Image 1 (cartoon, rainbow, N blue to C red):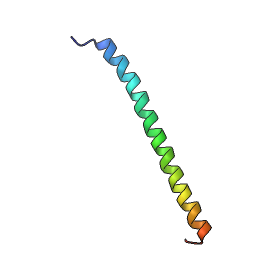
Image 2: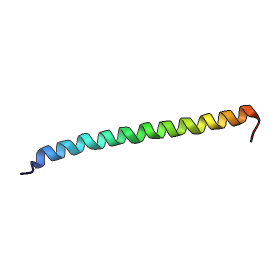
Image 3: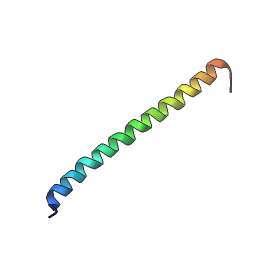
Image 4: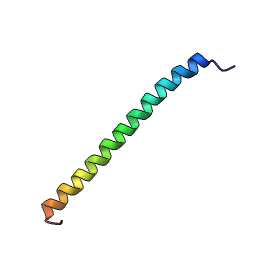
Length: 46
């Protein structure tokens, strides 16, 4: 049988993990965009 209490506990852990993954992915994306802009400005390309 499915234990609803344990299922809800695992859902809480799962959404925290998913949130962490999205935050890290967003930080990586922003850092790549920032590095591209800084590199373009250093080379004189605009």
